[in-house]
Image 1 (tube, rainbow, N blue to C red):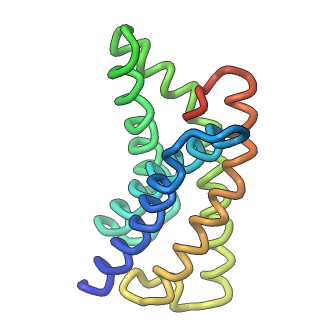
Image 2 (image 1 turned 90 degrees about the vertical axis):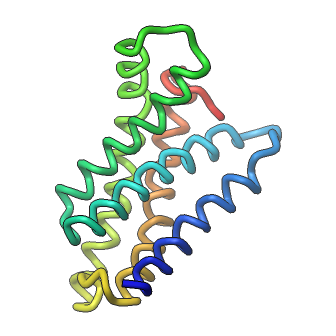
Length: 160
């Protein structure tokens, strides 16, 4: 259990460090980069909570990732805009659904490959699981970045 908590903290710490390091505004694609990281943070947190509560399973992990991801988008929308809760929720769903699905496809794709190749990758108590989860986060970022770029370009999602 302690090992699982340690790997979870390390995994979330890497995402947090990237967000903090990229906090200063820069010219170029920084807004898309931060939007993709923000999406990844919600997805990973949802995935980790789902695995901790129910064990690995794509359906529960996706459901938790979606709920956490939409919440991560909803809270800032409510804080920064003068809109009703229903409007904020709809805006969060529009802004993050494609992004979340893209992130989870990359993450689940890698985890499926890892589970096929490495039997230990399916056991959350193993170090192999949490190592492959970190690689899955990178894969998720790689698949969500283009989706975030499109969403920001189309004006559906604001760059951060």
